[in-house]
Image 1: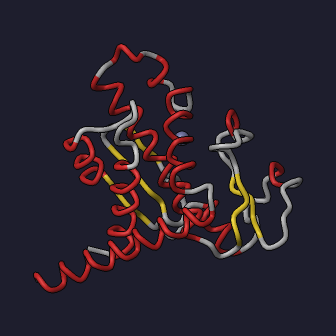
Image 2: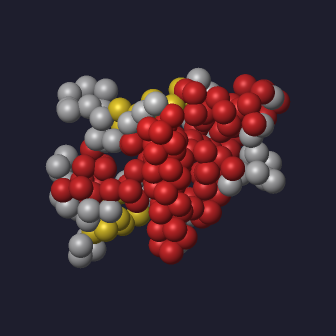
Length: 194
Ligand SMILES: [Zn+2]
């Protein structure tokens, strides 16, 4: 399997394990299912250039425009929302409007070239949708708390994941390194078995 897919799988697997012991913990079956429904794509352009997730699908787009901004060090889309987001050597990664200002899971500056940081944010965001809808499907008494796409349940899950794996630069780097190492080991094992 392609390295990017294996790397994203490692991010997903380890991040979901990070919810163990919390009220958002998934069962082993639900975690395994996340890896089964994961799709990693890298379109050359055109439509469908977004990421998406629910309980049946997790689509991660490696050429998502915000990831490209980080790669290229400029705002291709020229969005007005970035005009007061200036930090030398960085580009701003926007989050969904209703929680962009949230200190734990909102928009953030990313160092130009740090594509893994941008990808990690994207993955944690989409995983949070997978978790919210999976828990909601399993027990609909949670109601709107978990059903609303960017509602309170989503924000609580996403904040936990961002705080645990992403917001602190040291924690983030070691998490990304760990997932890279795991992915390399997995690819090597597949190669040997083939
Ligand atoms: Zn979303």
